[in-house]
Image (cartoon, rainbow, N blue to C red; front, side, top):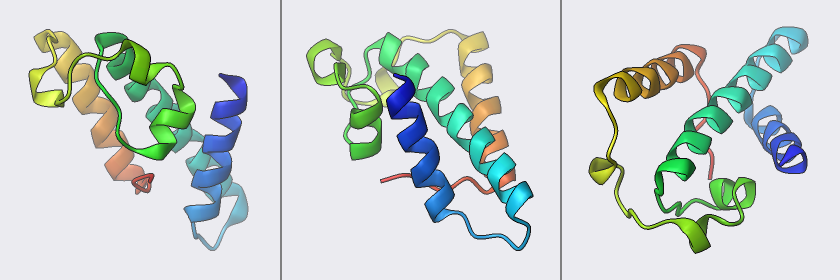
Length: 99
């Protein structure tokens, strides 16, 4: 998983454009962390990924997934709030949507 996370960070860094490189690197690292947290949760819940970046980060997903829409995920209100807080932080940081 470490290789996938470092590849993800490289993708995020390559997509990120800012004037201050140190800030951009810090934001890109946080974006990668948030992406991995959110998608690790979805992977554990059985959501089937369709995007190449998620499939690369979670290569066993096609073998273990069984839910094809995030609308059908069985999650509690607390889990939904947690996911929503991650998505809100991603948006606030301007994290790119990965392919």
